[in-house]
Image 1 (cartoon, rainbow, N blue to C red):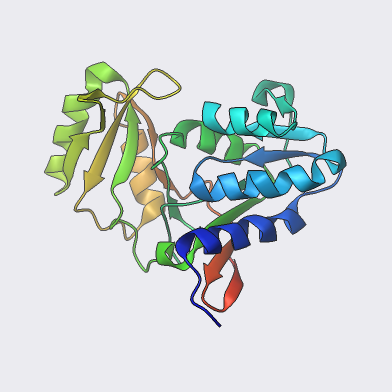
Image 2 (tube, rainbow, N blue to C red):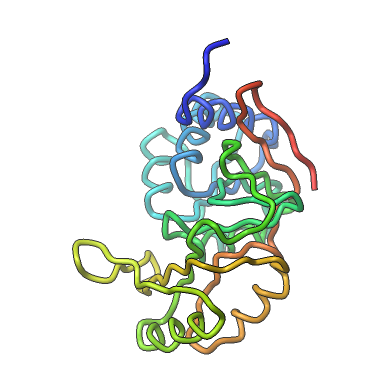
Length: 226
C-alpha cells in the first residue's frame, strides 16, 4: 500500500465523519484544512440535512458555495454533532485548537453540541498537549499583560501577525500564541487561564473535549473513543 500524504489522510477522515451526521438535523461544522475536506464530503449528502452551524466566516462561505444552508447559532437550541479538527489531541480527547484563528466560535458551537467528533491525521495525536503553539484569543488592550502572565508560567508568548500587523479574528480580537508549555492537566489549565481578565478564549478544549477522534493513519481511519 502506497504511503498516503497528509492531504490524502485529511480527505479520508473528512469522508469518514459523514457517518456521524444525523439525517434531518443541523450539523455543527468547524474550521480548517481537514474540515474543508469534511465540508466537501458533506455536499454529497446535503439533501439529507437541514443545514449547518459554522464556526467561522471561511467555513460559512465554503458551505454556502456548495449549497448548504448555514444557520445562526442563536437560532438553534442544540446540535446532534460537531465535527472539527485539532492542532493537537491527547489520549483523553483533550485538544489544542485555534491554529485557524476560530477557537472562540469553535468552542461556542462545540458547547451546543451533544457530541464532538474530532477529525485529524495521526501527526496530531500526542501524549501531552503543548508542543503546538497554544492560541489564546485576547482583548487587544490586555494582550501584553497576558503575554507577561504566560512568561511567568515559563511560556514564550507572541502576538500573531498578518502582514506585519496583529491578526484580527472574526470577533475583532487579537491572538497570542504560546510555546514552551507542557499542559499535563488540561482541565485545570483551561480553568486558570479563563480567569485572566482580557482572555476571550484559551485554545485548550478540555471542558468541550472530543468524545470520538477519527484518526487518519497509514492503515486507514482509526476510531478513538474517550
